[in-house]
Length: 416
Image 1: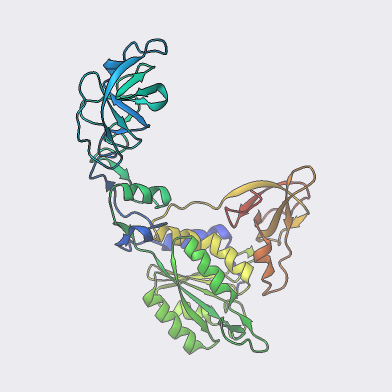
Image 2 (image 1 turned 90 degrees about the vertical axis):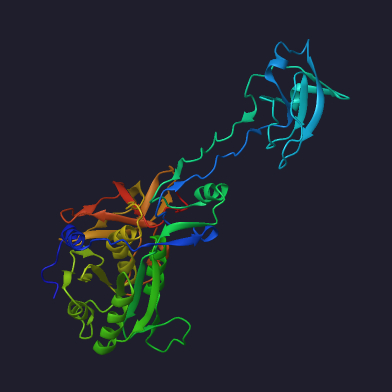
């Protein structure tokens, strides 16, 4: 088993050939629940924004021609005939030689074509003195100047964030059509794994992988469905796998893919339907036992039980497929440059990924310090690592102080 390993590039190609992302459909989402969802159609404005000419300052609505020639030494005098508050329709029209008091955001009254800032005026009883000439349209935001009725304001495929939600709210929309979220079944296997919330018997560990991978699925735009811990039993594992395949758009398992006597996962995946296993071991470190199969066009990723290996392979191979299923752009993980803090060796003939922690040295250089991965099952590597360095199959080592590219696990890494 694993005597004929695929290279990483061969494995990725085999997956890409078999994977054909299907349209999962769309649904309506309440606006306040639409954050981070993907639009399933263009959004066309049904109204002008703003829906009326509005003042951008506190001051006085005027006819611009009435202020021509006004300056500090020779102010123009106008008669104040009313006021307009924000949120109300003007109840007076403006005539020649007149001014109407107005506040920021209020409707420009009929007859006015500009607004004099309050700082450029002086009020004496019902008379307004203007000390600066005003041009037509000054301090006025015209109807439809922000968004015109009939304009496409958001495009199909856009991911909704706070700014986009604000635009939809400005259009008065309470619901919006978005793509359905891909359902990703998550299973853990192994006689030593125990579900969270239960007492931890001797010789057992809690289910780490299901929670770290499920969180990564959410980050990629998917919805994880936890099928629990399945014991090392062929019948039980086959039953759970069949249920997972039937109810989800993708299945991700961890554990049970190595060469142990109870590592049944690959043979069960291969028995579920054609084309079956397409990747059976990859020449990478960590992550060599990774198995990938398909039931029809539905992918099944069987990841190693080692937490760091499982999460790394998820990022490299499974994450891009979830992004495509979710209708999201296949953004690559963020990369930065740093200097190696120690010599990093490759595993002979295998593409090697070295987990690193980033820190600045006394010369303010960004240094990538290797993080010891530890023995199988070590979990602290996940918390300690900011990202990883990739060493090619034909590269023996990366020397200390050599500049390297770091692929970040989290774009929000504090040091960058």
